Length: 364
Ligand SMILES: *Cc1c(COP(=O)(O)O)cnc(C)c1O
Image 1: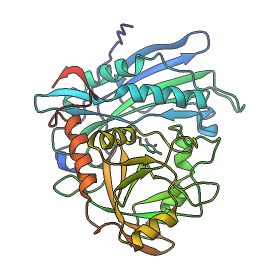
Image 2: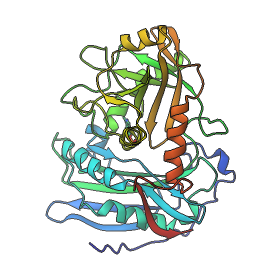
Image 3: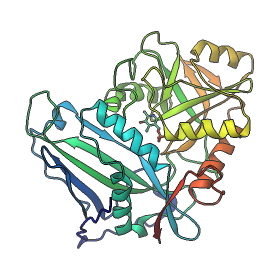
Image 4: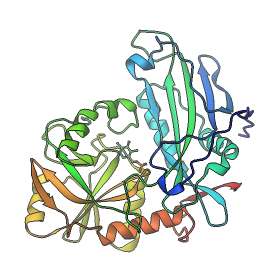
């Protein structure tokens, strides 16, 4: 479909962040946002680009009480020639549809997400940062805002897209990466079979904060979640998927339990490893097997994958107060190679030999 979204330009453009090397993650927001509404009988309507400003929301809106919402996370990158491109948006579209289905949120037309992302970035194109390691983070989200305390799907929804120029998710070395400490969580769980683990929803995060706050006490950046049933098998790390390299084999949790968020970076890592001939398995991996490998010197690398940090290497696992060093505690060569290739393709420095890059046809 040919969308033609009306634009209301801001009359109060913000000052740009001065130092692109100190953007942090989602600290600054651009001048505009995309907004659209859903009503019964009308469907999704009135897509538009408007100034980024606070929303008016009725306190009795159902999302504020029962959390019927979903979100996505993408990034736009600027190439050396000033071309603006995004990464595998077809995957975001599919995941968004699955999350909406799980949350009883009306699905968007398939081509709407990319059209809306393009429309809002077009207005804020000079906000796409240039410095190494930076990108424009894109946060599409939908919530039900019917005024109602009935525990029923809302009869009115809002779809918004906001944009934030961001740096690296974690403090990085000169090659873009820095190993972190991760706490293995054996008390709280993130997702159980039949739950919302595979859906990108706020409730999964609200319920996980107790655990991540506890991790900070052990000087850890994030949590490695174990399965809900046996507290035995590794699932994912905070806001990203987890990969373990043991004795030459790269292992990540399988998606069939429905408790793992199907990361687009995860899928990209698996495809690249297959292409490079590195053995990769989607299989159950117990924390005992990891401890064993660590004791035998076979725990070569652990890294997390996600849009925010791309690849983030784990240097130390903290299991019940005991520290397990991963490899030599530094950035692993496979993590570095994956980061260089994926971020390289995203920013146009490495040829897109997988056909993953999607130029928006916008030039800054
Ligand atoms: C978004 C997310 C990921 C990573 O997905 P990407 O598509 O690679 O960004 C992993 N785990 C959770 C819980 C997430 O919300």
